[in-house]
Length: 144
Image 1 (cartoon, rainbow, N blue to C red):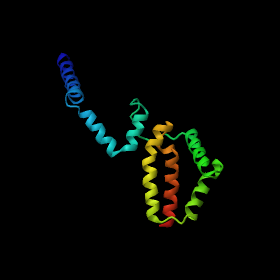
Image 2 (cartoon, one colour):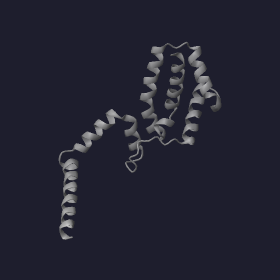
Image 3 (cartoon, rainbow, N blue to C red):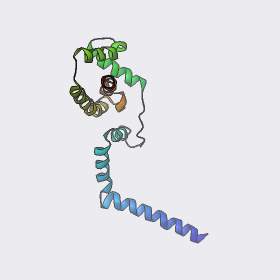
Image 4 (cartoon, one colour):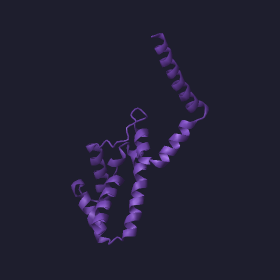
């Protein structure tokens, strides 16, 4: 029994030593985190938003945040929150936007999502840009 506990203790010390080595001596964690943020910016933003207490990268939709986003878009478009999507899609149709312009719009929405998430303190998928990105993708898929 003593040998078993010694083996478990040695394994635990090995993992603890590896953690200390990676975290403090080589700074691998900071470098790995930067690489992760560059490769998966949305997932990293979710982890940052949770202050590291919850490492889940799954979206956590919040109806109140979505309603807030709809209200912000409605303010910009000058309409009611329940008319936002319809007005947004109508504007896309009326402007006769090309596929290239739609692709550029999607790029802009994707880049704005992260900033809005931090600024409005909401999940990335609930931000105004995320909603407009989704609607633009729907419109884009109709064209193709």
